[in-house]
Image (tube, rainbow, N blue to C red; front, side, top):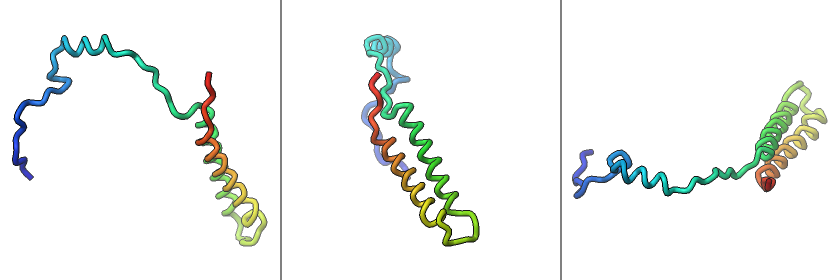
Length: 97
């Protein structure tokens, strides 16, 4: 569709701004440290929890014996433990250094 109206004044962007104004803005802007939500330990625990959940699903598959204790009892407990570890990794506050 064609645009039916035109802007009344040209729009100034960073590329069209004068170099003197852009340099002054850079000099006065304070440098801020980037603060991440998660810590390194949180990411480790998340990766471990994904591996535990994957291990639980591998335990659920396997042999042709449908009623084995590993498939019915152990594997679901391992999967739930992996999900619990993932929730804990998300909710854990990062350590203040």
